[in-house]
Image (cartoon, rainbow, N blue to C red; front, side, top):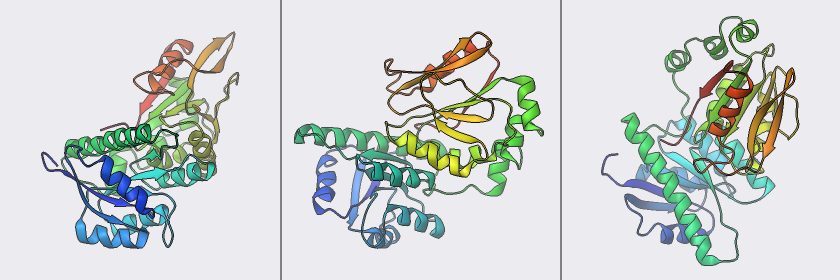
Length: 311
């Protein structure tokens, strides 16, 4: 996008929240609010007419919710990114996780504190951070990809090195090959992570002979929902990790949101530790934190994979 402002469409069924987003972004640099929509049907009409770069997309709306909008964007091959706007509820977590798996770029939480000024500041900072990330990603790519796009078959095979993602990552006999050159797999994901996980994790074979540890930068509550959704999609068991677990081969352990996860040696085995250690690079869970512990605990015999991140 270069110096061209990021064109933003606000989609929310609440007139108050549409105006709130307008107000907090009024003086934000390099952001141009090109329109608003009250529901999903109207959002699709505005996308066709206004060609925005990015949407703030309410999760729960009448007529057509945020998930429905994402699916239509994918089906129609429209190009804007979507930043979901979610509530601090278990239902909000479930729907937002589904949206991320459908290809939403990222999400923000609606502030729920009692201090209205602090809420506005939090909302503005969250929005500006995500909009800058969209801008950086598009600038680096040199193009403006549409939200949730599934790469063409040629792109997917060249990225993974094989028509079978698991084969490309772990060799033609993934279970046996993985045991030969590593004793654990670590996967790190941030922005865009759930959509990538939806492709990569189900491709891992049920016979995988090592444990998989992975970090998705998400708040508490959301990671449990994500683990359950991925477990439904994968041949391997996917669980949100808990303190004191002994890792097993063929199980994928997701770091709990808002906590740090590390692996410690224990005689001839290993132990998962979930801690309240400080944030690293603004993240808890942090993939750097996990990687250091796995490298030490497995004496370097681990395969590390970084899939996605800001920009």
